[in-house]
Image (tube, rainbow, N blue to C red; front, side, top):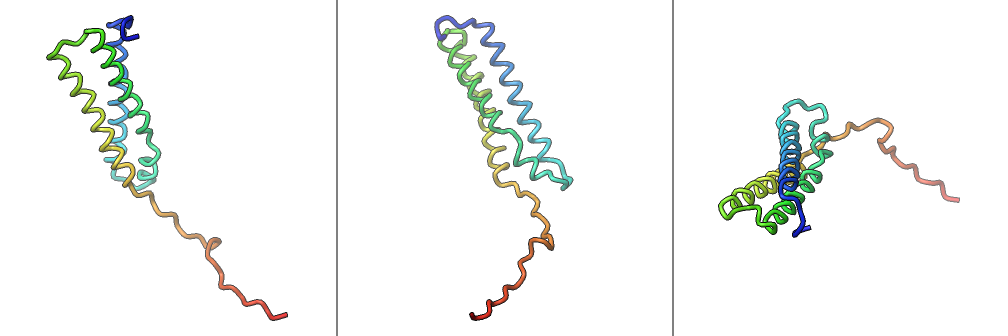
Length: 123
């Protein structure tokens, strides 16, 4: 694939993966910035940041294909690396935020309260 990849289609795939990754990161940022407390922390815990990471890895792979095909100039190479790096840094920061997010603590119900034990009568 490094020798036969279509350069134009590979650039298109790179742009699509980058845009989708940015959209996921923007969605997480919007969710993080919400100030209401109706399940936001729980939603943040379930947000698909690993999907964004997968897309970032695809961008990195597509960059390597383009670089191997000679489709990226020396000056353009620095810019493309910076774009992939920006995605990776954004995902890493969001992942740390996601792992430290506190989910709302469940309210204690009367059914789960433990009742005092009675000692068994000796037999």
